[in-house]
Image (cartoon, rainbow, N blue to C red):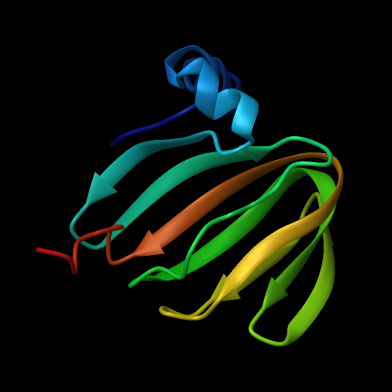
Length: 117
């Protein structure tokens, strides 16, 4: 078994992310990777910019805290603590209009970058 505490992960992410990434609003900490999936903690500051590109893996976002909008392809919806959003592989998506710091658990299946060689 592998078990994690969100507070420990948040602290680890804050201390292991280079300062220029923290300032750019793109801090991400992958804390689990097995062939079938990977899991990470992604934090975007209020007013921040999410400049991610589509992934080659399916992904699920679980909003731990914060408020924002997410656009997936042509669909836009608000997200807040407790929201769960599935994004199919290769589909354009991003968070925007981030009103309060957004803390997300991100699940990739299969593991992120597993399809790249």
